[in-house]
Every structure is written in structure tokens, then in C-alpha cells.
Image (cartoon, rainbow, N blue to C red; front, side, top):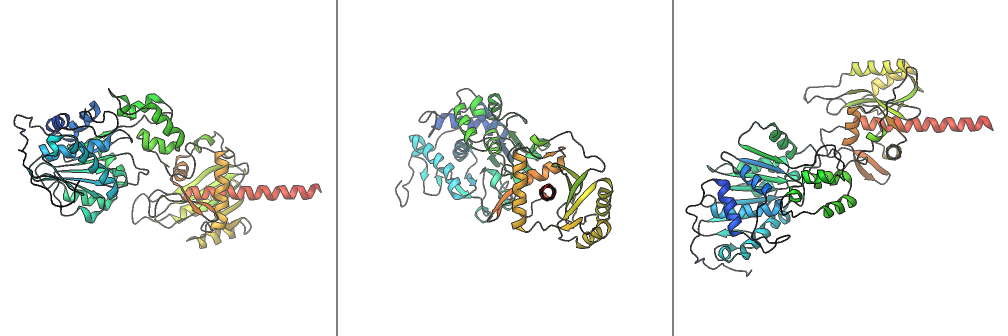
Length: 484
């Protein structure tokens, strides 16, 4: 491609008279008749739409559609399909069609642009009609433009797209999505099409839109989800075919051996998210996939059994948790108080106070370890009622102390030296934890600042298990001294 001004296009406009009026059929026909596969399987041959790609086009471009979301694993041709639809929009869409391709950054957006550019170059009929610039494609015969843009609010304002493709919605922020929706829908006929693998966290724009699509009560919104069945084994090849249409269609362009190689070289939750299309809690999780569930047991704590309690409290935004651990390493959730989403909500301190007293009366509590932030007056009262030696402050913000405790529970979980009753709230808080590396070792934290995915019960569990280990070590030293 030479720099400088583009020469005037002298070829006559393509004649689409007699073509179907329907949005989906026009785009299917254009892709099939004019586009060449630029790379991969079938490179250099006519672009042959597979049945699942036809389903996507027919659903997204059905009458009345304004927004479409396709959730699909990687390597199923989503970026190449986006490029094909972008070119089709330029030729058979409305006059002066502006096609925007929005991705996580300019580099990713340019990948779609490169596919579209190569499709134009491979067909002389298109090449003599489309002007190729470094940053866009232009079709002079109807003043249509294809423009790749980064997912930044400032880059999106001022446009009037006939088709807006959002590649990898899972990395798009609320601010970007608001900018996308603010520029879309100005024309009598336009579509915002998001194609993405699932996000690594339900705390995302994509998850909110997935929930909206699953309700299936908005005729202007098209939703198609390709995912392996929930609960399937990661090596279940039948499940792979369910989640990956490019593997199951006629003339597949995805191979099982490629998926198997990926399964062996990436962590299981990442494989499930990116290659099986599943929504997985804990893609960046602190604990390995499935390790906590493997420690579940039917055991229950007996009345009067000796144990340690740990308390992690908040005032309003986060949750407050009271976790117990028996002397042989059985963890359970004694109490949890969580904000239901009400900005006026406050932790019911009287209920927490009562729960602590009941726990002391129900069990032989060797110790209550408390994170002191915001609860000093209650901790002092518990100390007075239950004994100064049995109630102590345990600062969870002290990395030199918290990091070894975090590693202790991690090792116990992966080696199945700890047990629990499978409480869903405790399991959820542990699943929400991501590892934060520090010079002292890994700490647990939320996936991001301000996240609604709470981890307080997990923090209390780490403290409780660590204090049990301390008591066990002290008792061993005592027995050794008696023996001597």
C-alpha cells in the first residue's frame, strides 16, 4: 500500500438490484459471493459460512434488532466473521454506512481491519472499488467507511454507525459501553454487535448483558451463547463439541488436538472460560480449581467441642463474618452479615454481638481472633465477658503476619488437610479471592477495588485455621517439656 492520496475509483458501482431486501440474506449473499478466506483453513478459497455463522447473522440482523451479543469460545472464527460482516455492511448496508470496530485497544481493533483489508485485496472486484488507508477502508460509490477504534469513550463520540462491532466485550468497561450505546441507534436501521468470550468475573458489563439476554424478554436484543454444559469434565470431548461450533460443524476449522494441547498447558478455569465458553468463578482465583470442593465432608461440630473463632467485620459496604475452626482443621461459617445492596444498610451490631456470645456458650472456644478495624469497642466488651486471654486482636492488614497464614490454608486445601461442610457463602467468598503477590508472600484480595464480590469470610477462615495451627504447635511443645 503506497502512502499519499488515493487515486479516483473508476469502476462502476456493483449492481445489487434483485437481491433480497432482508438484512440477513443480503449480508449472507455478499459474503458468499464476494469474500475470500484470508487465512487459516480454506485460505484463498471463497468464504463459506458455516451453519452456526448463518444462525448468528440471521439472529443478529433479524427485523427490529438493535443489539446482539454472541458469547463464544476462542478460535471459533469470531474476528474473521466480524471482518466479513463489516465489509458486507459497507456494500449492502444503508448509504454512507459507517462501520466501527471497537476492541480492547487499537492493536486488537486493527486485527479485524487487517482481515477486512486482505479480503478486499484478494478479490479484484472489491480491490478496484475500495480505497485502503492505513487507518480505515473507504467505499466511494456510497461513501461507506470501516474504522477500527480502541475501547475508549473519547474515541467513540461523534460517530453515527450503521454497524458497530464490539470485539471481546469482556474487557469493555461501563464507561465504554455507555459511549457505545450513546452513538448507536441514531439511524432508522443500525446494529451493535458484540462478540466475545466470557469475562473472567461476573462483575462486568458482559455478565449484565448475558443475564439480560438469558431472560429473553427483549425483542430488540439478540443473544446467542455457545458453551460446554455446566459440570462437564474438562477433558470431555463431547462437551467440547457442544461449546465449540467450529469443531462440530460440517467442514470444521477447529481441531480436537489443538484443544487438547491448550487443556494441558493452561489452568483449568482459564481453559473452561476461554476454550469452553463457560462462566467460571475464579479464573484468577487464589485457590486451584475444584480444590475447595474436594475438602468437603459430612462432619458437624459437636456442642462443647474445642475450637478457635475468627472475626472479620465491616460497617456497611463489605460483609461481616464469624468463622470457626476445630482443633483438627474443620472450618465452618458460624455467622455472616452481608449488605443486600442497600446504600443505607448497616451491619446489625447487636446481632453480631449476640452471635459471638452464643458461640462461646455453644463451644469450648480456645480463642476468638478479631480484625480490630471498626470494632474495637465490641472486641473490648467480648474480652471482658469471655476473658482477656481468649479474645485477641489479629490485624489482617499486617502482611508479615497474614501472608504466612494465607499460605498455610492454601497448602492445607491443596493437600486436603482441611475440611468443611460446603457452606455456599464461605465457598463463594473463597472463590472471590485472587492472589496478590507481596515481598512477604501471597495475600488474598478482591478482583478489583470496590468489587461487590466479598471475601471477608475467606479472610476469617485464613485467620481461624492459622490460630488453630498455633495452638496445636504450642500443645506439642508442652507435651515435649512434660516428657523431658
